[in-house]
Length: 330
Ligand code: GZL
Image 1: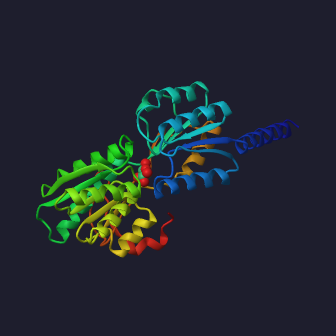
Image 2 (image 1 turned 45 degrees about the vertical axis):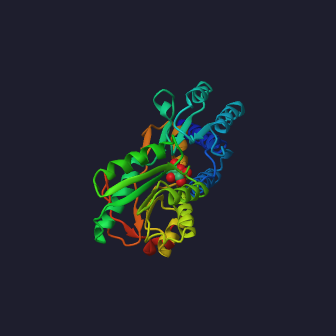
Image 3 (image 1 turned 180 degrees about the vertical axis):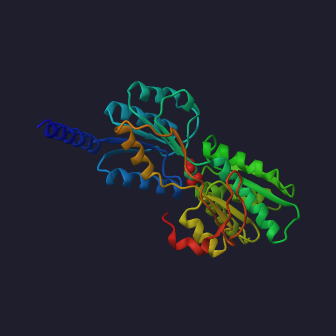
């Protein structure tokens, strides 16, 4: 009789937990829709939450900090169960994230980790190693140029992401660190294209008018690289040949540009956070401990030739984009 009672009580507890997890409301303050990477990231998280049977409260910040702050305060008012947050820039979040903490709503930091992370309470931070990604961008170009016998002085430009975003700050750190290894690379331009295709095109248009010769473009995301390609073609130059173009993110459009010969390489940074978010919330619901900071494993480098050794803290050899384009998820 006692065993039956224990079994029934255990069953009620498990079903209660499952029922509780199935009734969750998860709020997501997302930056906006500035890039294909962001779209893939949003879609993947949304799909995972829907598949888990939870309710999603989603806010598109339209790349404006004030919109994200208002959304976070709205989530608090709504009394959501969890908050997912990716900040458009690194600073200016301490007050509102403290309000989230005071409301006792578990906070998960996705993609870009705010500067105030060491003074607010968050359950987990999940993102990429942006310094490594920036390093690989330049390393790839340095090794590629060597492989085609180009050891002359080359003029390079760095098109940065949104100023003050951790992806911009840290990719720039990685870019500059690798540039120190290639004395033949002369940095002649450094400007933000705000991670968007339109602004990438505008910045390249401006550079083509003000800089005598550009040999290599380092674009801190693929969308800006694609915008720059439009500008290069409009100026009568041949992208991928007259100007070597290296992007970051490894979105499908970059693979297509590389296969078409318009672009030379892209550094991978996965946007597929959905499974991580579900796993983290399930562990929090079950009271399990897990790593507070998770840097997703740096993936590959995809290019026009394959076989270029371009890792920094983690060794990586490039793979020819044409060989894997059909297997890409985003
Ligand atoms: C990287 C992410 C960056 C992407 C851009 O994790 O923060 O923001 O590289 C996106 O495409 O806009």
